Length: 299
Image (tube, rainbow, N blue to C red; front, top):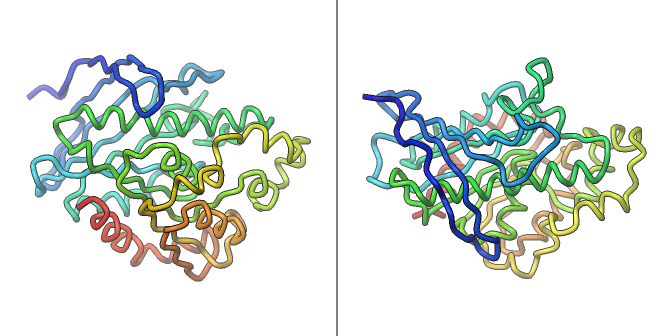
């Protein structure tokens, strides 16, 4: 059997109020196990960056073997600067056990999208200007929406039942996507926050970098117009969202975690002991909990 499942296909349609866009998507069968089939997915980013290699989005699509013919699909948005997806894969495999298909995408400047192999994955995302940082985030949001465009064309999954799952940066991007796109049936967002103009100056991950770069709060607010979930609080009412935040988080401070709950007025928010990095201890139970909540949303 050839490992090329589909030749490049042309997708042309409008999503929400977005203008119609035509693009090619390549899907290739990469591996098979007794539990799932894994496909490599590639498509062009809707936005152009200073680095052409960053403008191709790579996706990794898992289809469970023991599932309904066209299972619901979870779009997974990963952590910003991790060297691998070890954490995300704990959730991917739990989603598969629940009979859910999964596609995780490499976000701007991650993995295959790094400007140079010597550059750590995701590190270029933290730009030296508010304008570029906003554009990087905007590209992330657009890439996730285009990933849903692709999923809705596939016979492998039920594109009418899409859920969003994100951790840290993935949670920030996922909340921004869900705020302007009604296609997802729900979202499970871990260690996320809102009010970005405040967050980047409050977070111990970005505060020193932002100050050293001489970036002002007004510049961040201007660059983030239309990107923050708080801007869509009224239209986010009724959306099914589960939030999990850490009580001692200094990367996504509790103030900003509560702001994300304000942005989704009907969200269920749970607080767990620990900080942004020590929250890894909750991997003992969190993947099964996230998969349970996601399954309920996509039934």
